[in-house]
Image (cartoon, rainbow, N blue to C red; front, side, top):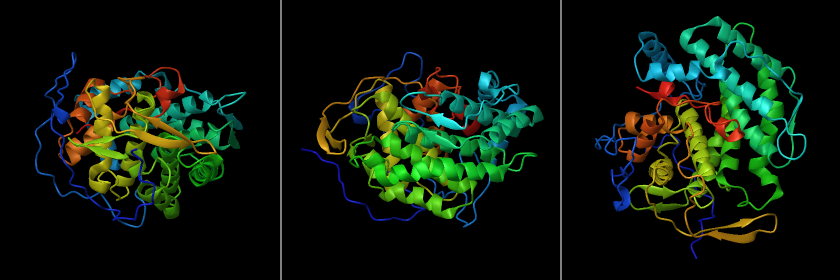
Length: 422
């Protein structure tokens, strides 16, 4: 019986650059053909440049979460020039209903996700409106959009007191925590934005739930919760650390990525490695919606860490890249190997196992692929054919509001074509 390695893993260099095996264009002997895409879109492998993240300084860089100055400035210049694909990505943003300066905040004192009285859509819709208006301010300099983003952030920081509900409250604290912090990071220094009050909200409302989940896992067996539960809370802790210039919080997330006992740490999230540069994703026997969600969350963690001088993308010989390639290949229609996955559920630790990759939700359209394609294919010059094909299939990538009305369409911020093309 194949079991996951359950021991805690020793720390390794925070700036490790993994070489990794470059996946071939036909990994595992299975070619992928797409009716609306080019199967040979991936560039041939080239020597891996010896890159390091942009800084290793003790002080935090701002802006320094999902978007650093370079990406924002490049988008600004390319959009002004009307150059594609940035112009197409900009159009995708500006037509989104959340990106309008007329958006008005609808804050709550208590957000409920899970159980009775759920009202959390008000939170995620306002967060994406703040984020998208903030992008329009940073890229086009339109003050009306800056004002709209500021007013949304101020309204929530002056109102929100708690997040509650059933176990899903931990998902709300994680997903909306990292997204809220990213919107605030874009608005840092904007006239009238009460950053200190916003930091207080993040520390007192979101972070305690994030930490409680990673520490206690809602009093369940450590294996009970899927990878995305850990990952969203790791992302929130990292983002709050950057926003608040709190090195201990940032390091907490980095350490959990490498050594955590739960399913969000890298060797639990990608428990098995297969030939062809593929790594089996922890939720791949569950369904593909949550698998792609997890890829997007881990990508967000890696990008935020990269912009602060820490390479998690390449950690453990590009283990995340192999997991992302696996999920992308299967969702593009290719065959992938699968090792029996066993775990324990509930408080008692009842045994469960999966023996095949799940086709539930196969072919998910979620805005997660441009970010990964940019890092591995462009920054690192690695051959990642499935990431590249998925990015091209999704282009121009949208964001919250472009992928349906349900919460799954708001799990990542998106707009990667605008922000990560180069």
